[in-house]
Length: 187
Image (cartoon, rainbow, N blue to C red; front, side):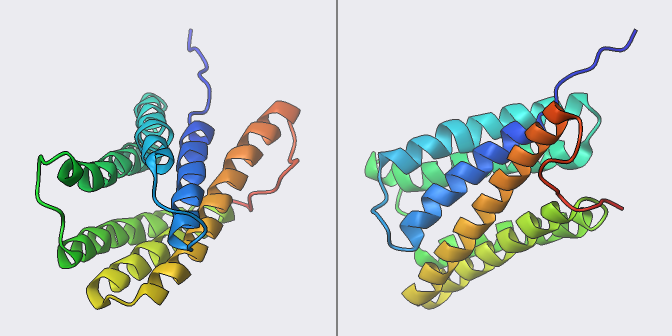
C-alpha cells in the first residue's frame, strides 16, 4: 500500500522566498547586512530548502530535489563566504571572484528556468527573475557599479515575493481543494 506524503515544495519555496526578500531589502538599501540575514540564510533559506530537496527525492521530483538542495546549499555557501573571513579562517572573496560565483549561479538558474517552461507560469516568474537577479549581481561585482546592485535588490524582492506567492498558493489550493490562488496552467 502506497503512502501519500506532503508536498515539500511550499517549505522550500517559503524558505527561499523569505530569505531572498530579506537579503534583497538589504541590497536595495533598506537596511544593513546583519546576523538576521545570515541566520535566515543558514536556517530557513539553507536548511529548510535542503530538507525540502531531500523530501523531493522521495517524491521522484528531480527538478524539485536538485533545485531545493542546490539553492539551500547556495545559502550556506554565501553565508560562509561572508563569515569565514570575519572569523579569520579564510581570505575575503574578491569582487571578481564573487562576480564569477554569482555568474555560475545565474547560468545554473537559467537552465532551471528552461525546465519551468513545462510547468505552472509562477515557476517561470520565479526562475526568470532569479536568473536576472544573479546576472545583475554578477555585473555589479564585475563593474563595481553599485546602482546595478540596488536594481538587483528590487528584482530580488520581486523574485522572493513570487516564490512566497507560489508557496502560499500551493498550501491554500491543496487545503481548500480548489484554486484559491492561481499559479498558471502547466504544460
